[in-house]
Amino acid sequence: MYGYGYGFGPSYLLIIIGLAISLWASWYVNHNFKKYDQFTSHRGKSGADAARYILDSAGLQDIQINKVSGNLTDNYNPGNKTLNLSESTYDSTSVAAIGVAAHECGHAIQDQTSYVPMRVRAALVPAVNLGSNASIPLIIIGALLGMNQTLITLGIWLFALVVLFQVVTLPVEFNASGRAIKILGSGDILDSDEVPMVKQVLFAAALTYVAAAISTALQLLRLIIIFGDNRN
Image (cartoon, rainbow, N blue to C red; front, top):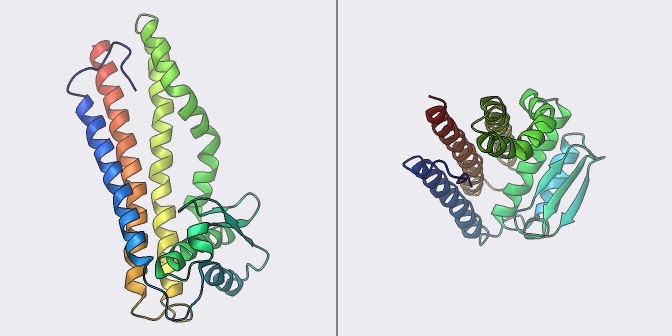
């Protein structure tokens, strides 16, 4: 990704480490979901049923639940106040599916209660979009223009915004999982012996965000090492 004549050296180890961490986290979450997707909940509720129950209990009857295509493409959209459950979650009565649905409900409750890290993350979105699109082109242009440090430094700072966004995302995701586990532990949706299974699924899912943050931070470190050396 960052070849363009610079950095073909030991710093590539940072990219390899980040890639390895991301691949492992992706494998781990899929492994756990598939494992606990084989366990049908004792009460027979689907992911959509569980989501509707949780939202209604939180006073969020106005939030619409949609089925979307894909596998583990579940998300809560604060813009139009909709909960979008993937095909692998919506109709499934597995413990894993209910856990994923409850996690997304956690985001909806965060939105309702104006959870601060969620607000901060939303405020960062415009800057992060700029950073993710413009950072690398600026660095490349700066390198091509005889190591123009102004452009390179600006590009690195924009890339740092992406890292910041992913770091801010961590408490948002862990808090949503915590809310989900607390709700499911009340005994109205799952039995007590099924809750530890959900914890495993949601913990694995949270690790993907940790892996993404680490991987991006390592890329930022590599950029600093490469262009710091050239500046010196």
